[in-house]
Length: 126
Image (tube, rainbow, N blue to C red):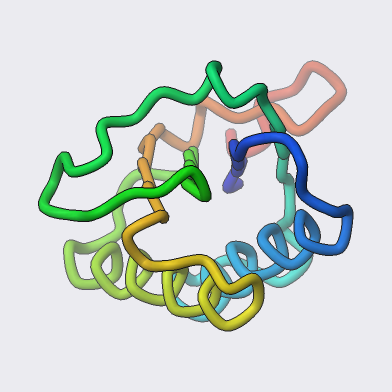
């Protein structure tokens, strides 16, 4: 845990994609108590029309450079940790890949420890 899915529009270089993925993982390690080797990420690059987001919902000004990040992780992190995580992801994406904070959409999906199997058909955290 966590499992991270990153969605962005097609057209980015492999280096850009890696910078985005690295920034998200580094923020999770720094702010959400995730071990450095606990890295499972899926990056989706989709056609322009396949990523639909209101340009101003939530009081921001989104562009076509939107990066959508869905993080599935164990339940139990505090509100403060989540706030720091959101801010750190946006900060690191800005620094690593020149992503504007308004172009970062993050969704946390919290699950119980028994909801994970990392292989072998076994409940990992039984």
